[in-house]
Length: 361
Image (cartoon, rainbow, N blue to C red; front, side):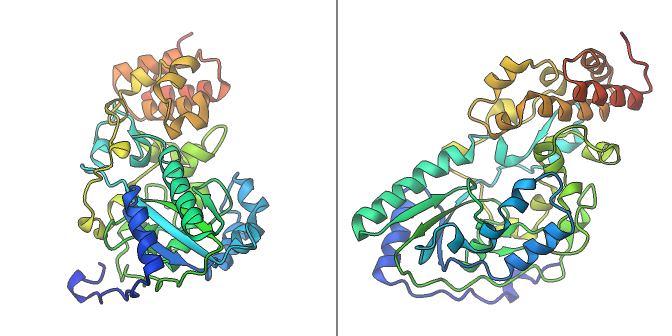
């Protein structure tokens, strides 16, 4: 269990100078819920990245290896940067994100993908902040929202926004596991905040709940076993050893995030852009299985799901149908054995074998 909240020391907070106070006020006016300041440095995250890559735990994410040097050193991205303004937006759900896992006929989509693509929301807000900063203080600024080899989580830790938990994700005292992050590099020399300490204590809930045992040890993730990686980043057939454990998770996985005790301090987002779309909250698997390319693009317009393409998404849906033993699921799997994608057809045949049925021509 984690250290009880009443025994956790109060965070060390710097007294803002007028410049930092003005930046915080402007960021909050633009819709960001938390703001911190850091130097363009990621502490020991570079060493951890090297170990991650050397172990091959990045799987097919070759872009991580290709951009490793730039990830290790933010100055390699922009040598003129002197400070980084880190911003976070709360996207905490109103309901238990794990409740839907019991409903095998429904597809479980990660909380972050049930609303608008956060890139499309965060970027314009961060751009406005950068333009304001450049105009008011005659400096330069560059923004990053998961679009360049910037390690936002270590920077956010340095900026006092939260700490990297045992599941390797950021944890916040105020917002728990539910923060979208953005980084604004600037030539301004801003005093950095005090890095947040680790408050995980002896708690291991995030490690224990992982359906595919993706954590070899605390603070280390083998992405090749992670359902988020398998359903989003991984192309081609998903290894059979993980398919049953996927259950009805068709895009991402929130298990390790959802069980964190620090979430009790988080309140549901009030940001309209991140309220869940009804059709993505508990979609019927058999209906999703009928999507062709055009209807897939229409349904997921403005959603991060659109980026993985129909084949990969329907592959995930097909595996979930294989884990749902209903007659409706079986009938959908039979239809999917005639899909144009060999990856989907293979998953459908696996699903029918799970049902104990024979493929129907």
